[in-house]
Image 1: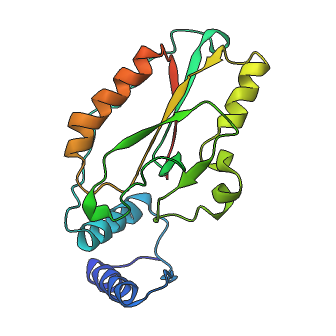
Image 2 (image 1 turned 45 degrees about the vertical axis):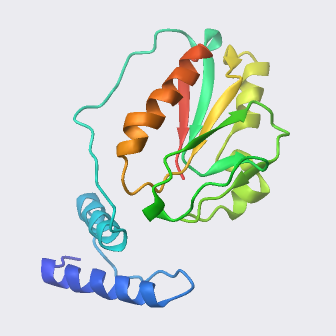
Length: 193
């Protein structure tokens, strides 16, 4: 279905207005086209109008590197932006305007008491089984079966709703990289929230 820009703008404004008035999140089926660029443009417009601190950042290039080691000889780490932390850790700030760019180290312990603070996705299944979003048990099983060499001692948890990423990019990410490199992690599995 083709839609002109004015219709699109009106539908987005209507959705934002209705969403802002509702205490319960909901969706409206507007029958938008399946065009991925249009969907992405709508998301950027919506995010920037809902979150005043929203700053869209784009990578200039894809940081792709050929694998240097076979998986069976490699140490694997997890990084999640799903708001995962240990229950004993300080909770994340959940308001996107607060731009919580902090992170938590998460042990390689499938029996640890994990908690999810993120409010911008449905984590009902992950609340029942953390492996849905933070696959620590499957990673340990891959190690036990010899498919991967080892698992990082500690992994990284952080929020994914960060309106302004400058502190994340300039402060948190260098620290995260240092933590992963100090453990001699070869590959990282990223899980979004």
